[in-house]
Length: 144
Length: 386
Image (cartoon, rainbow over all chains, first blue to last red; front, side, top):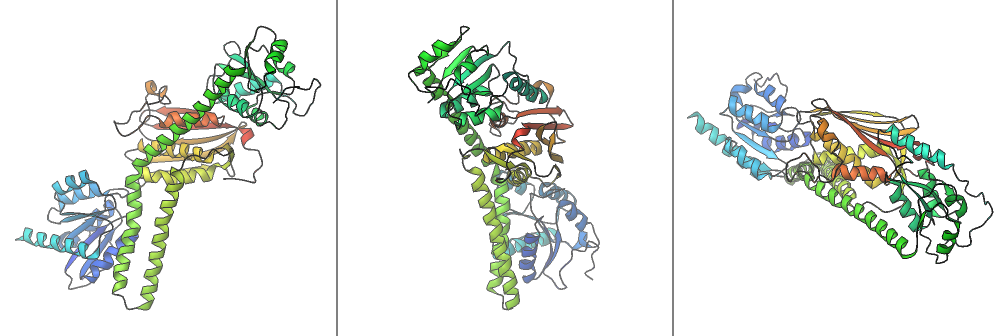
């Protein structure tokens, strides 16, 4: 159990869900992981869209990933491209955008594409956890 | 200022040979591929007086291709215009007769403010040269000052307009450390392990420092270019500083950056204005590489000149547009995305620093902007790099 080829797995058993945080800033991944782990989530990390795609296609992640939290401005495959890939190939995995740059047009466009929430840094831990919890509910409803 | 000019050869500031100076100027411009001034088409101007007025006039006229400043004269060897003339390879004289007697002068400009100078000039001017003095000369000096002030205003306005495009980069770089600070602070509220508290507190302090550095960089960049005397600028450091600023305007994540710096390259000029030039060139280069590519920054001293090259592997500029890119208000960007003043201002700043700028571009392969400065600006005292 809990053996992932990507090496990004940091959570434990009996979790509330499995969340992938995609952000090029290690500090952001660190603080999001810290917040969500305290709330009982397993957390995977990816430093860009390419790593995110690699991660979800590794081992059992494709089956067990519950929520993706994704930054927009990243190297290689950026957030927009990564979200498009996830929406097409893993439509049941809800995506939350966590970005440093509030852009109304982009937010509208992404929400139309099925992104469940658009959060602007800095976001409080409670707000982040509530967003993830709503995304989890949405995923469960999708499975019904 | 220069009434009662000495009639003997003072020899305090030995004049350069006018023909040598003209050759050097022609060589510098030819090296950068810029059409050089020819004696047959240029108006040959002599400047009388090397105080503030003479210096401003010299700076202005030196930029005009249709004018050749054949010399400047002042009795005071410490007059600022004489030092400026040396930098520009414009011959300096301490006797009016030596300047206006045998140089084929078309126009004599008197900016001494000395009422008696008009008569002296009329007595000594030969060959039918026109004399501009008194109120007319004063008007010209006022216009030169006004033009200089306008250039400064234009540069600052264009810089401020460009800073608007920094919003995404600033937000990204500010909000990331703020997210860390908020997350750690929330964690600290529930943390009982003192060692963890200390570690997280230190992380918060470092994040605050990063945020502060962003504000400091931007505040420094957005200020009006100082009007202080030109100073020696460490070019490599200025390019790195520009790269740091440019990343607020453009995302560098998918850009490979190659630096090829010759050590200790320095030029003389206004450091704030040069930073603006570099930021603009780097920003343009990255914007030309929408799908990523390579940004190359190079400094070198070659053939008696200092060169700074900014290259990209982007979309390139078509041949029919190349001749227009330095025109004011010319832009290929969508409405609202560019002022069309960036390269125009760059050209003006470089010219003011007595350098030249040229571009080589191939559609689909990229562009290279090369700025060339005369070597003399490199070899001066190195005690005060900016």
